Length: 98
Image 1 (tube, one colour):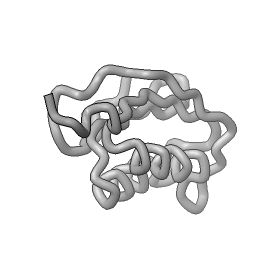
Image 2 (cartoon, helix red, strand yellow; image 1 turned 180 degrees about the horizontal axis):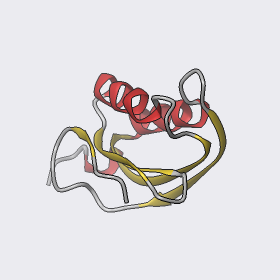
Image 3 (tube, one colour; image 1 turned 120 degrees about the horizontal axis):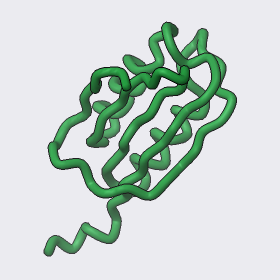
């Protein structure tokens, strides 16, 4: 087992507010790739955005902070954070809406 394992965080987040049709997913994908965070993001039919973030603690914490702010034009009302399992794949991708 790699020694770095305890330094990894796996988090499922749900973002509420004005976060669809404003470039929110593209914003998160770009920031995740810049920070080296694995996972995915998708729109949900209830108007929220859901994401799975996995990577070094500091990178995931930074990305969560960026998700709380969002891109220009978005208005984040609430972000729910939940522990999660690591994603099966490396990289960060957009998933189909649910």
